Image (cartoon, rainbow, N blue to C red; front, side):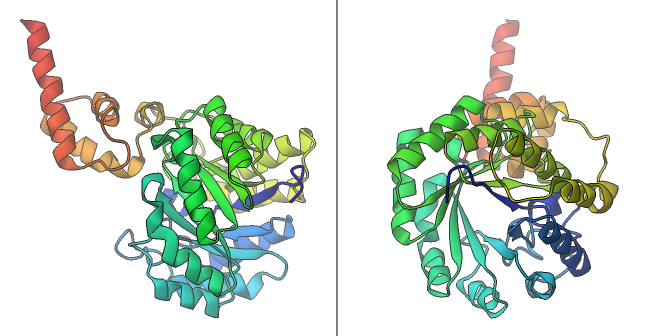
Length: 340
């Protein structure tokens, strides 16, 4: 792909499902897919927030994976639909089902420290003719040099795209530029992508910076709907890319209509960035661990924001209740010492 031609990968139906308790129906899927295709979006991600086989264990979705696939496949003529896949949640047989419905792309998501888990899923999807992406979740947890090594591993598994993922929404534009530019220079033979969250209100800015650094596939959602406080807004990102001279192939007016008429009515449009969500971004702390922190903070009478920050200094990949409690004890001990 020419670096001036940018593919928008719209994740409204997948990442956006977190924001509405996974209640996108099969009919919603067909309607949003139709609107996105009409607006010129070529890559459309559907399904449960955590991907294949996510329901019911990780939240009960309004439809099955198969029903989502049928809905998307029934309306899309020019655009391609795909789904997310987390090894350990998804199973290899789920990819067979996806192939049955002629799914065009699969995105295999692993923590950046655990990319080896992706290998069988990548190889199976490639064998079945899908375009495959490796999404390096929590990319910020490793220095750039180590991320490059992990990216080379998944490239050798056969992926077409490698995406830097700002899972906690805490990366700064210069961080994004550094990660993307290094992958672009040192990991040849694949497209580079970016998936950002908006905890520090930087999702759009970071997405634009990723493109400037060499990313050619960027994730967005209509109205910015998504997990935690959301993602880069499709409509705004497309506008800025066009203003900067990049070619996206989308009709911005139709995108705005889709956002306004379909997605905006189901959102709490007055919702801002609350202080705890902003803290998640500041500390690069993934929202999936928030229930643990809230529980421990209540038990130890602590401000959850303080606990988030201190836990993140120790581990940002896997936060357990045991770890949170150890940190909580240290915080309270320090408070007592300071009072003496």
